[in-house]
Amino acid sequence: MSFVAVSNIAKRYGDAPILERLSLDVEKGEFVTIVGASGCGKSTFLRLLLGQERADRGTIAIEGAPIAPEPGPDRGVVFQKYSVFPHLTVIDNLVLPAEIEASPFFGRLFGGRRRKAREEAEALMEKIGLSHAARRYPAQLSGGMQQRLAIAQALLRKPRILLLDEPFGALDPGTRQDMHVLIEDIWRETAMTIFMVTHDIKEAFKLGTRLLVFDKIRHDPQFPAAYGATVTYDLPLHRKAANAAGEGTGPSPHETADLEATLSMPASPRRERAAPAIGQ
Ligand SMILES: Nc1ncnc2c1ncn2[C@@H]1O[C@H](COP(=O)(O)OP(=O)(O)OP(=O)(O)O)[C@@H](O)[C@H]1O
Image 1 (cartoon, rainbow, N blue to C red):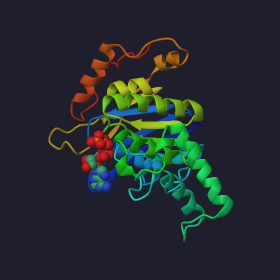
Image 2: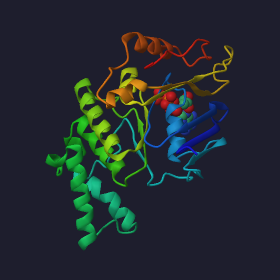
Image 3: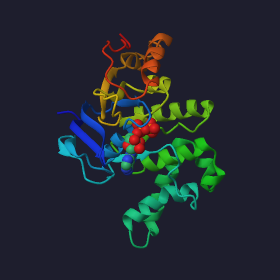
Image 4: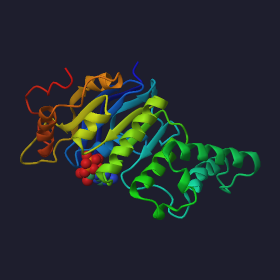
């Protein structure tokens, strides 16, 4: 039994099929990166995993149990645009969820429970490098710091699955590199299972242990929206494992260019050629 089992799911919005015949088995601790043409349904897939939306057909199970019909503490999420509370300081952004969980009506904790929540928030700020900014408001943070805060919020309830939807898409290259280091550290330390949507192929190769390409298998040129997308390439990134052992290098320019060429085309029928041999 795999940790996350996605079996033959389909999702439509109105008359438009977005995803179809999508099946996938993911083991605990995998870092799955997802790429695909814009609008092909990558974020929709993350929302299905989150439980924010329901598939029209098929099932998603975590450790054999059907996924809860709403977002739960076992799944954390970070979006490209900051999902933090703008009117709260960094530390209050990290304490409030605990307060609301413990006291949904008043949203306040007192005494030992409040102290514990603050200690946990402080430990998290230390881990993600925001201790010095505890009293600042989100508008006073850089983009990278705001995303650190969003990641910290997602980690608050110690999720087993982390869903990242283009989390670094709005950041400059230097900040992105820092965030790569942070997310890799968190992943190694927590052994979380991560699904990350990205438009950056190099980032997908660099961070993932497995890379999925979403695309359409069936295509009607008269009605481009007639069919949904599915997983058309599923590439184990063996080289990543070698990297972890201190060996190997990133993808060759040829491999990256090959996949970039594939993805630069609009969502299209499956191209009948062998998947690039990654990390063989
Ligand atoms: N709530 C919704 N209602 C109707 N259509 C939707 C809804 N959410 C998404 N869509 C449509 O579903 C399709 C897939 O959207 P989705 O955001 O999943 O794509 P994506 O691959 O993540 O795109 P991008 O890479 O541009 O972020 C798009 O055509 C989008 O317009």
